Image (cartoon, rainbow, N blue to C red; front, side):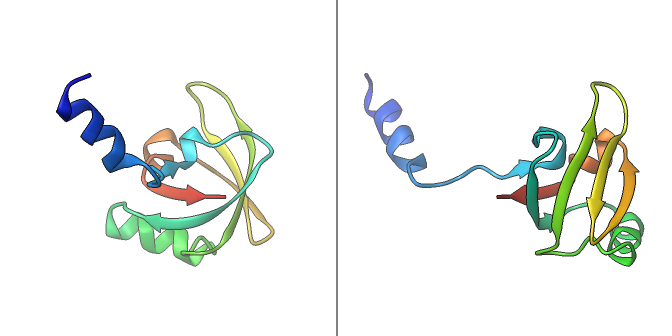
Length: 90
């Protein structure tokens, strides 16, 4: 193993990569860590209750289609592009 490889491995120990909604599992509950989207879309999501720290449940997720979420008691669907801009954690 080269020096770069081992230092890369050690450099990443203890650090969690951020997961986005499209990578989450159906039926699991997460918390919104951050939203990195176009300002207009981000404001609309905030009006729907999706703010940093909000509890988010993935209700349905099918390949190539919308993802159905439940946030603060409200269900709504978002596309993959938007889902990729919402970082979540457990």
